[in-house]
Image (cartoon, rainbow, N blue to C red):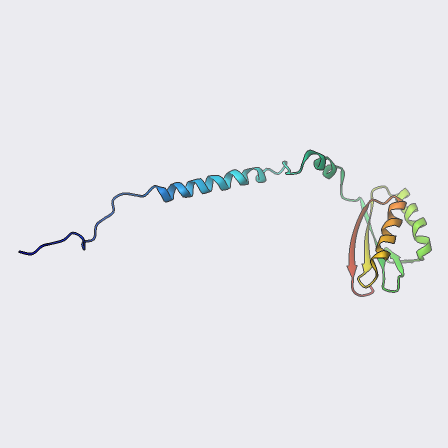
Length: 139
């Protein structure tokens, strides 16, 4: 008489394991709980003091470009300007156009001290909205 073992026979699994399904549900819940505050457009993640500062800072009404070339010549909106006349003309512009923004383009080979001097001139002129970029070639 032969003995038959059930060990080698294939069995049909009729139950579903819930553990991986619960893991997936908990991970999705965690992701949505983290993502929900980020989806609100009017809500910012800044502290209240920085939120007030962010609301106060706005885009300038008008932007001019101040370019300082490698030979330290200065142009304001493509008009050559003597370096000595720069503070007076910037004060006049700031007085006549409130909310004026200046984009400073300085040659990349100039020392940082040149940029610091330009920024001090802008500050004394009363221009607060500035952006700084560098350029490689003379325009």
